[in-house]
Length: 216
Length: 128
Image (cartoon, rainbow over all chains, first blue to last red; front, side):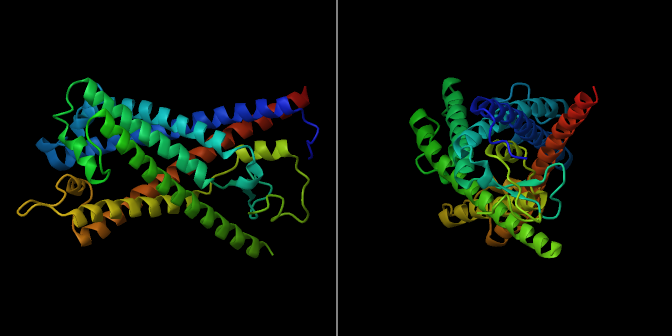
């Protein structure tokens, strides 16, 4: 089972290939989830509110050309949600995998209940790397979307975007405001991702400990 | 830190760093833990989002958080009030759990497919 003699360049090539594979997987996952959320939310909004459908959802049309709270617009929303979230998911994994480092032995545990399963290792998450990745992507998204509102000349009319200042003190629909908001959003993204990773790791370890106790 | 060479086996297996790295990158996500963590984080985020507006308040005669309250379209019973914060957290937990579950399942499924394909390819090359 030992592969201590593997050449370092082969090691790096394998690492890069698998990281890119996982990047595609996470991009597809995030893209599908976000696209489906927009699709379902639009159809639900139409079903539940009838003529008032899209009072808020229509704002997505500012960023997603062709989107509106209509049955056809919902599919445009699915497409754009898939594209944007897919790109974000891919970037998240790239930042995560590069900043988590290559010490993968620290980030896995063998599944005691099924040590010979096709995928016997259970993933543990690095809270720091996940926080960095998700926080950075959220901050970039805020800055880019605010810049878009400024560039298209609708910053003064963007009353809903301005409401973010309730959660992001100092934020405004302007480039300096976007940078301040981006710092806040990075902090929130980091904190919640760090919490997610630690809750996840804690539960994995608890479940593994339970499986080991059962196996004995 | 959990020892990946421990548990579930009678003796430690001398895996090299390269094998561990590859296995680590293909590691399986724990579906239950991902769903539970997603639920916990989404619930906390929604609770705090509601509470933040309640603490900030609104001018006399104005409603608090009318835009956030629009979530009641999808989540019956939700409002920007203290009981509403708890109700919103419960709904958000369901959404977070669903997203965590779906992400972990999709991740594992994709990896099973690629690992299965690699195993089949190896057996096919061996047979030749």
